[in-house]
Length: 237
Image 1 (cartoon, rainbow, N blue to C red):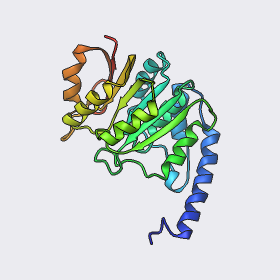
Image 2: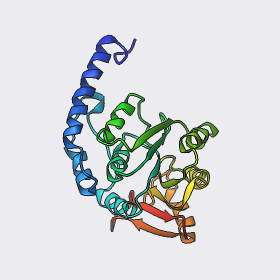
Image 3: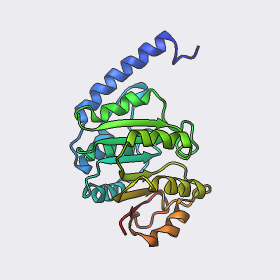
């Protein structure tokens, strides 16, 4: 039996979660993006819930978030949640959101996914809101099973904001775009992370540069940087 599954391990995890939950509530921010980003740095949890990790350049994420907030999305889907940094941001800056859906591959190559235990922690991100409902699909974004689960969650609704930050290969990002574009609302927005990352195995920049001219789009890239970067496509050309 692993330490995590032992009685001692479970008791220790439960105590860590309760402390982390209490500490999170103390710093839950308003919808202001600066407050949200600051609260991520302020948060101090325990054990498995010690931090809210954000793999972003804050200035790029802030600019992207401010643009999206102007559209007040009600249905949000994130592909690639990792340890919940951007999921926390979406949970806080869209107080009128109805559905916030995470699609994440356990043990995925680009981030490694989140342990199922972390879902209860993610739910605390909206503990002060009753109108927003979170949904979690732990699976391959490109599988028929995952798409079926998304359809069941959406019912007759469409996605207002889709953030793609999962499989970073050229073929992977292309498939995610092609699959999930069909679920977008007429005035939907699609965000892409790592449009400025040029590491081996990263093909987001190539796909982004291929498609962006066909849409109204914006880029959020730190001058002089050769990593990360966010892109935003407007479905309504």
